[in-house]
Image (cartoon, rainbow, N blue to C red; front, side, top):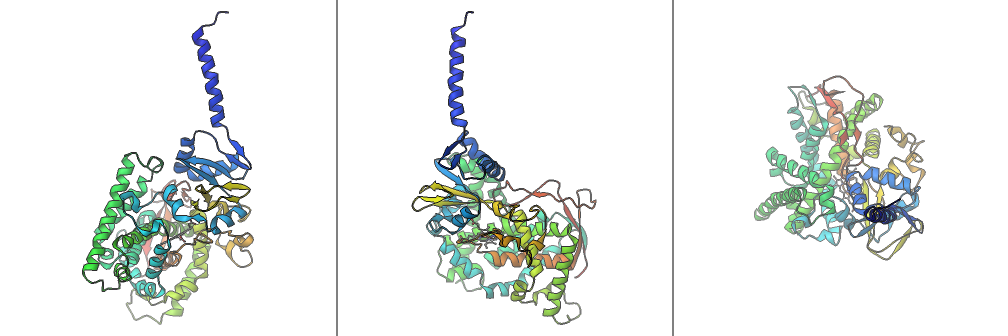
Length: 494
Ligand code: HEM
């Protein structure tokens, strides 16, 4: 049989390519670590576009052991399990800021070439946040939070009835409180400025595409969008900082407090941008999920309601006739909101366990270390999915179910293993905003559970018990996936 030389060379070419590809695409095992193999850019793409699925598939392939892959020039090691968790959250050589800089989107001052002290050390951000989130400051601001919430709620629907998409309207409430807690009165009072801020944060969210994060030097549309929004936010906040400085920084507003603390304009703007962003993506979304879960779990809603009623009766005298409900709530001291709502605390804890399961990054800035028998070299990145603890069936019974009772005395499922609950982080980097975030969620719940009746309805206004699912592939936050669920409300207390 005659064979064409062209066919022969094609056949040889194809088999060489096949060998090369199968070599490139196979996963390899280096010591105990499985290298995912495949085409690096595709792996990296999945890491940025479908992160939760990527991590789950990686661990399935590696039989639960660590696996590695490459992003740009970096080696990334994914770890899981109790031992790895201890290292990941406790090891002082694992850098927090460096991890976030490269592997996570969100607002970054370096994107617009502004240098601040956070690149070397996150302690400056902590000091500033601690100053803003001091107990006395939160206590003083509490009544204004409630005024803000009430004013915004009065704008919902028609009169005292209507229907809202919580992921829009409740989100806005939380943004309003976050702006008040982190900026100044002029901004907090100005609905149009807050709308502008809202839009710029959304643009930054939208711009966190795989292209932008993976190929940051390419002038892609998402890069332009992100940089424009970041510059917009920077200039907007900078103007208020400069105005505050020019006016002598005499008020008790957050910006003035930071100016009097001796912080530079850029460091102040950075802490504002970061705090508002975290409030926006974390507190906002979790408040919405708590309302949805309570909408489908009447027994927990009733327990929360009773507890909040008890709080009011313990801390308020019989109100003078006509005292608005939100003012009644503002006479309850901050300490009581913090320590006298154990049921609501369980609800918040369970909501976050279910919804907030992002993958968190670190970078090894010290010597080579060994985790789960795997060498993590200096310069390597480490990633850990919070869901490895929060959604682990060996820690939580029916982990996908909303069941706040799992944390109650006698069950305490989260205590079975070290760092069994990661909703607020753990070890060296626990959430620095937990106190304010919990308060904000509680205030919204109090206003909505006691001041309103609400039911969940679908887009056609029909009652529904079917909730959307948190999108765990979202690299920042857990937006809902599936049919939008609305809250049909009636105001019952003014
Ligand atoms: C419901 C709302 C929130 C949730 C669920 C949440 C959750 C978390 C988690 C899981 C971490 C650890 C991340 C890691 O280990 O990589 C963290 C860290 C942090 N959070 Fe939050 N957070 C919330 C709200 C806030 C707010 C409102 C602020 C600021 C005002 C804030 C500021 C921070 C900071 C600065 C860190 C880093 C701490 C450090 O480096 O030591 N968080 N948060």
